[in-house]
Amino acid sequence: MSYDPNWAQVDVSSLPDLKCTPPGPRSRELHGRASRIMKGYSSQVRLFPVAFERGHGVTLTDVDGNTYIDFSSGIYVAGLGHCHPKITEAVQKYAGRLMNCHDFTTPIKTQVLEKLASITPGDLNGIQFYDSGTACVEAGLRICRAATGRLEFISFHKDFHGKTMGAVSLARLDPSQGLRAPGFFLTPRPFCYRCAFGMTHPECDLYCLRYMDTVIQEETSGRVAAIVLEPIQGWAGSVVPPDDYFPALRRFCDERDILLFADEVLTCMGRTGKMFCVDHWNVVPDVMTLGKGLGNGFPVTAMVVSDKYKDQVEKISASTSYGGNPMACAAALASIEVIEQEHLCERATQLGDFLLKRMAQIKEAHPIVGDVRGKGCLLGMELVKDRETKEPFVEAGQRVYQRAFAKGLAWIPAGHVLRMSPPLIMEQDLAAKAMDIIEESIAEVEGELT
Ligand SMILES: Cc1ncc(COP(=O)(O)O)c(C=O)c1O
Image (cartoon, rainbow, N blue to C red; front, side, top):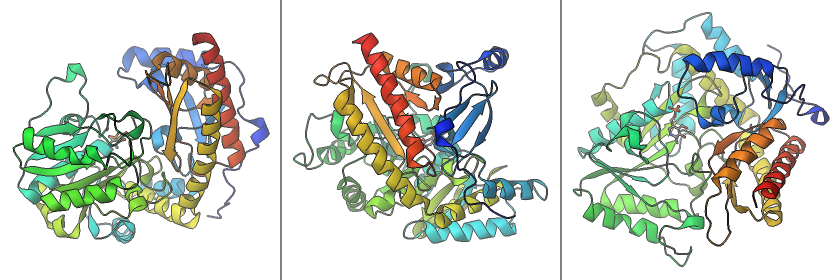
């Protein structure tokens, strides 16, 4: 294939390109029919029920012909841009050659395993593939138990790890989900804007980390297999820990003989400006899970364990029906190559720095913006009723999300937190346009609600 490196270039002056006020008539008609049958939509869809037809690079086009600037990458997935030609070609090749042969070795699987093992931090060289983030988190939990012979886990307030029973037990429970599984304990996250202990970093001396000793002593049986966390919280709105947190957490785990499990499903593959988020702090976890950007839209995820524990993977009957199928392996290998060849970690850092500055200006101008934060192209903005009390402004968050979407920005809500996740390949001038739409929408909603 002859590859055009400018395949995703757009005419910035023509975007967004709205033919009608979205969601338009065809979107309404199709979603109306679909939603009579399909239940359980995300808030992203419930708040703005548009029907999409195609994606190309940094844009999404709906069934009414409206083309949006994409500030969601699907859901933190298509970091290299929608339908990147190299990923499409890789998947197409195996769709016509071999779709599935269970977990038998294939040439493409060997290639991607060797590639992935060569770029993962430190001695993280044991790999098994899955088809969803949730499935590989579950496998990670089982490995931690197999490796330590211990059954308990500590995870963090407002982290998200997926929707199966083990994964939901790591996070806040929806009341309808009933009880947390035995052996799962939660502790406050390093979240300096809303410190659970009312302290300030660095004077706190990482009290939230030290507090985990209290959790271990008072709540667990003392037999903790692993501490599980997102390196940067995605769902909660790009909550970045202070730079001294991760190295201190690694020491904390080592001193207590507890495994460190970094769930990088959302933060991996350049999203935060490094291939893996833990690389920001030069920390090597014992277990790591990868997803989302790994296949740039094709469902492929990976559980990665350190050399020390990789033989334990044999104990947990780790294979699945779809994990590591040839199309998935081809998508993952092509994605890694594109990230490296097109220097997308560097691009994510540059774009993120630009966006953080722009977000700081927006905060300066609009009192309902309480906090702006992020790393690379993983960004968030909190809306509050009052900067002193920091009371979450959920209604404003929803309205700003809907208003900006109607102006042609496809993005991600989370209550009062506006989440931004542009493709890493987005040009700065288009990202600036997206931020103008966001600021305009914030100004309108601020005028209405305050
Ligand atoms: C950190 C993290 N872990 C796990 C998951 C679950 O992944 P999936 O939706 O692919 O099952 C997600 C999804 O958003 C996530 O953000």
